[in-house]
Amino acid sequence: MNEKRPKDLIDAIEEIAARNGNTQEVGEPFYRAFLEMTAADVERLTIIVMLNHEKEVRRLCGGKPDERGIAEVTRFSTTSITIMSRGLAMIDMFGVYGMTARIGPEPTPDTDNELSGLSDRIAPWVQDAVRRALPWLLQQPQARQATLSL
Image (cartoon, rainbow, N blue to C red; front, side, top):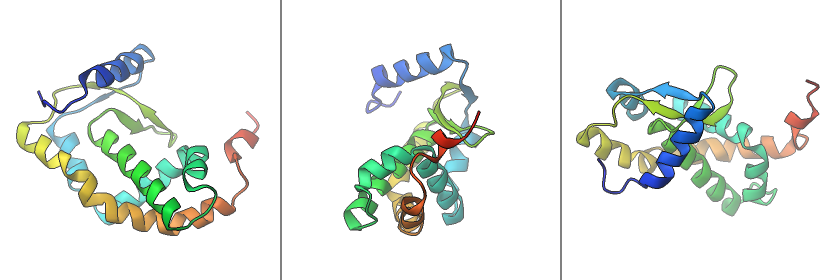
């Protein structure tokens, strides 16, 4: 087990997610898929994360697509994708980001080391996506999801 793993937090997330039936299978092919992402894959995930967390994105950037706002949203989005790479969150078939409990093995030590560097590797791609998408998102009416009739 990875010594750096915040076990109590991860166990709590998985317990709550499992209680709600939110699980996903993980294993080496799952982890490798994140390690093999292209810039286009990262851009799609970044935009989905930003749309799912629109209120938080607006708060983080202070409603402005300036360098500080781009940096904050980049950090948030990179962290969200990194959490997904560990199997603790996913985007479901409806495009909704949510926490999950893993079913399957933790990554091998070699894969774990590679995953530890994932955020540094994808951060420039995430930043490019945020730089392009944030101005558009901020021009949209706020809380679009709340205006949908259910």
